[in-house]
Structure formats: structure tokens, C-alpha cells
Image (cartoon, rainbow, N blue to C red; front, side):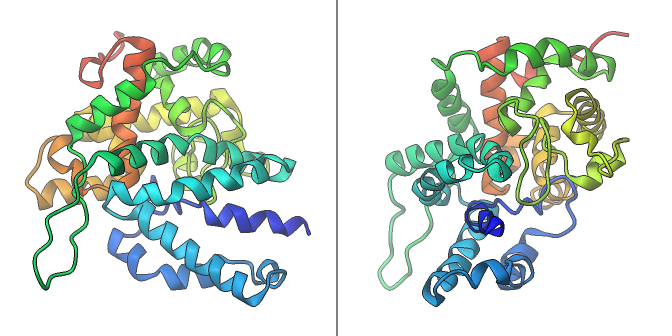
Length: 311
């Protein structure tokens, strides 16, 4: 019975395979949805379901994977109701609370996608042609919507202890201390947060990334320790900023992977985040403006205004 927690978990998985480790392309993800389900679904768990429910789980998983790693932000709106309906179940068991923390930190994406869905006019249809997907919101529109969404949000309770503790760590790694607010977007400052794809901690570091920047993941997972996690995240951000020379691009790479950002910049002959934004995975299109709105709300600074610490 303890394995039953995997079912709701899989239904909301973002399958963050395009993130920090960046080992496969977006096309790979789309083409391998069936294979992924076969390899990752626990058949022992699925046998607890009726046959019809078992097939529904597989289909929903495939749909969610495609939408979150797909190119269209508005498709994320379809996940909103199902994600919210299973959140109480995840929160109800100690074993699944880390996954509930991960999901809870991502509900804002689904709410904003729904807002865009309601306000975006449908694309024009041509006789005899299949309907086209709605265009992605322009990056400037994304920034405006996210700033508006966070305008009246109260100071996160968990941030009160972590922000002053972790800012000096970011400064020590020559990274703007304001970027400690990455933890609000990644985990709502919950160090236990864990994604279905294996990202852990305040800054949702994948195993390979954590090891790359000096953390152990076993026998004790240092990603669960706020200071260690912050130091590794800051090192990674410093590396990405040196590579891309721009905080928006660096944060896009933190979320979607260095290779994804590099490929899109080359493909579109681009030098800025805005030039590739609508071609990034849907989650990443929302991730960067959400971080910027968070900094505006709590630090009064835009990403373009961040300055590297002296010394």
C-alpha cells in the first residue's frame, strides 16, 4: 500500500529531463513518451488499479509530459484542476509531502497559464486546415502578468529565516545575493521539496549537477542541507552567467539546460532571452519572468539591474 503514493506523483510529474543535466533534446522527449511510461511506471502499483484506470494513468502521464516539456504555455492550463485536486492527497502522507512541496511551488505556473488561456484570442482558422495552437505570450507580457500576480503577495513565512542566512553564501560565490529568491520559485523555501525527476532541496538540484558542484547525494544527501544546497546553486549560477553573460539566459539554462539554450541561440541567431523565449520549453518560458517578478516584489530590482558583488 505504501507504493500507492507513486500514482498521484506521476500524474503531476514535470519529468525534468531537459533541466540541469540536459542529456536529451526536446524531440527526444516527445518521441519517447510511451517508452518513458513503460520504464518509469511501477507496474506493481498499477496492478492495484482497475484495467481502465491503469490505462488512464498512462495516458494522463503522457499528456502531462508533452504539455510541460512542450512549446506552448497555454497547454499548461489543462493541468491546473488535476494538479490542485491531488495536492491534498500528496500532503496527507509523510512520504509524499516532499513531492507536495514541489507541486505546490508550481501551481502558480498553471494559474498564469489559465489566465493567458482566458485572455488570448484563438488563432485564425483556415478552411480545410487543422486549428493552429495559440501563440505563446510575448516575454514582455509574461513579465507584466507575473509582476501583477505577485504584487499583493505577503512575504513568504519560510523566507524569513532562509533569506538572511543564505544571502552571504551567494555573495561569497560572487553571485548577486538577491538570487537567493530562486528558492521561492523552486521550492517555496522548503528544503524537503523533491521533484519526481530527482531534483531535491531549496534550489532543486539534479544529482549530476549537485555532484558537479561539490555535493554528495549519498549516503547523506547534502542537497537537503540549505547552506550546502545554496552554495552549489550559487556556483552553478556563477558558471552559467560567465557562459551566457546575461542573467535571463543563465536562469533559462538553469531550468531548461545549457544545451537547450545554446541550441536555440544558434538556431535563431539570437543573443538575448527575449529572442528565444517563445521557443523554450513552456515551463522555462514562465520560469524566468516569474523569478524576475519575485525579485521585483521582494528586492525592488529587475534581472537586468543585478550587479555582481565586489571583491
